[in-house]
Amino acid sequence: MAFRISTCVAAMLIVLALTFAAGNVQAEPSGKLTIFHAGSLSVPFAAIEKNFEKMYPKVDVQRESGGSTKMARMISEVGKPADIMASADYVVIDKNLIPEFASWNIRFASNQMVLCYTDKSKFADTITSDNWTDILTTKGVVWGHSDPNLDPCGYRSLMVLQLAEKFYEKPGLYDAFIANRPEKNVRPKSVELISMLQSGHMDYAWEYLSVAVQHDLKFVTLDKHLNLGDYTMTPYYKSAVVKVSGKKPGTFIERVGKSITYGITKIDNAPNSEAADAFLAYLFAPDGGLKILKDMGQPPFVPVRTNEDGMAKLPETIKPLVTVAE
Image (tube, rainbow, N blue to C red; front, side, top):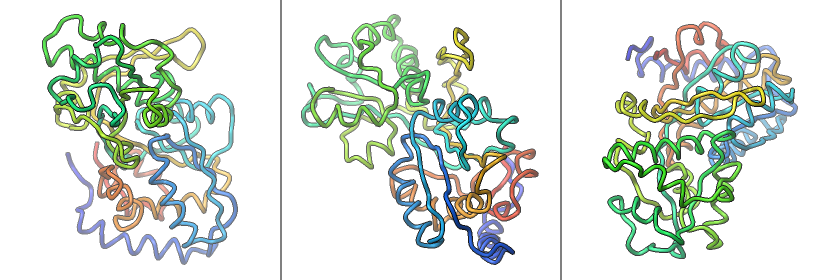
């Protein structure tokens, strides 16, 4: 993987970028800043919002969270105005927003899938990374995941189950999983499952590691062949394919397994472009937003990454914070 600039040089340029942003002709950003983002980013983005508004008190950050695919379609299909869109799967931005609604896509964080539970869950005292497949196929065990048509965590949950059949060499295991998971246990977004776990209405739920850490949930970690958290395993992950609904009713597209990578973009016709640039500069700073992500269990990319075409189109104030990695 080739980088355009070294990490050291990037670190030196961060100060210049932030200084340039602060001293720009339109000195201080102000007004409403609308951010659409994945539900799994709710906790870290709340902290990032708080710090950012201290830096720029004239800016009012207004966030709306949900399944990444749903949020992207709110922009591309419903026409809701937004300044920034952050997705739990960077591919959602590529497929739903570029090139008509956005011009670039920055990969800024990773994650991995875990199976969450609480002390109230059936078999809570005995579940391990070795026997979780047996427990999820046991009658009476209530488990679920988010909607794969609306939320990347949903189709990633199904990918984990497909990969488990392959990894453990148990033909029919995936069908056995689904047979023990009624449709009512599929929720619009993954964070909705948390309250069901905590109230005891659900025994297990598929979530991102960061979400488990942020909500103090118990969780089962998975082998790297299953957790979608190791980019070197992407060739193996590609064997998992999930069909989800397309842009038009009755159409479908395939999501192919790959390591979990979050993406973010600024909408081309952003109502508050200046504030959006300032927010992204803070988010991409190693001692700013990226540190918050790391502290909350979500490993960031330092520096954040885009491709050659994306780098050429980035706002000048954030270019020094970004490197090229195809």
